[in-house]
Image (cartoon, rainbow, N blue to C red; front, side):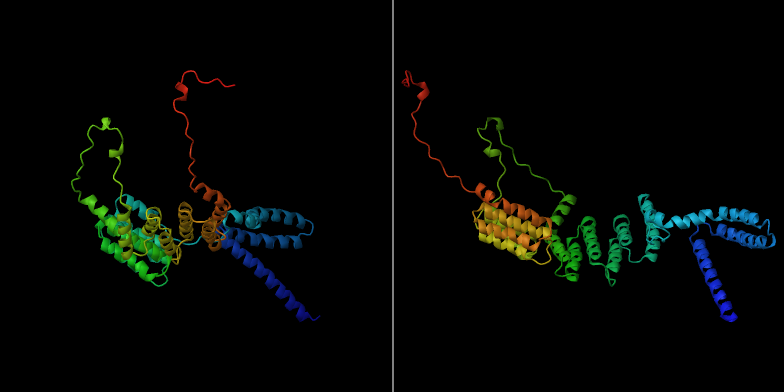
Length: 400
């Protein structure tokens, strides 16, 4: 082996060793809580190591003692760092190691200022955070809430929400939540059902044929009643109280005290009219199906209404299972046979085999015959004709 090769090999090995040592020192310096202290220890350690080698060479007799003393001094300085380096894999399981925390906005200062009534200062703090995290939904809703509820600047809140919703890639659920917040403020602060309807219709137009659109359409269908309640709260009319029943303590029955029953036929007509305007209103369609079955004894019409609900796309699984169970209830109450009810319940198992609703349907199928038997009409038992006043007769015949 040539001398040049030995020199190159030795130099390469030295470079590798020094590189590893330098990389380790750099990592230690980077992870240290006090880099200045590490640099100070390095400045002391290097002369001590050099002195250790010189002592070992020059002082042949006292060299080992010098090396021991210098080694103890070096170990005392670096023992905490070496212990931390060795234990870091274990402690990192609990404290997250040296991974830096994920940067995120903080709104505690803004919320505190809002509670103190310093709304403009709170807006400034929120905008500071949104400058770093412009797509943060929490900050956008907090800013719009202060604008609408505290500064009475609903147009400004609407601009804030629209700016967030109109950006490309905005998450659908966050867009729907923002428009629902805007609709809430339109109703609560301005009693403006038309503007609230416009905000909800944006969800339907932007996410058609989705669960978000169905929920928005459901809310649109009931905006009329909400507006009426809000207007009545601000414009209270005199309430006429009807005259009560006289001599209530002398009545033979409580019939006159019972509240007037709502005509199911009138309810059904109102529901049909409502569904012509809002065909996606699942709540009203469900009520109409119950009236068809219980009042009109038309199980076929009730099944038709519930089938429309069951077959609507993008409905939550729990709602579909609820409607199938309701259809089974109506079938049991109104005399459907075992195979018909079983087929309805088996649809739940077929559609949602891995959900809890399927297990509940299986349990109900196991008790279905008993359930049907409990709803069967009990035949009347005709009693015989017995002699009257038998216990009042004198001298009853003696039994032999």
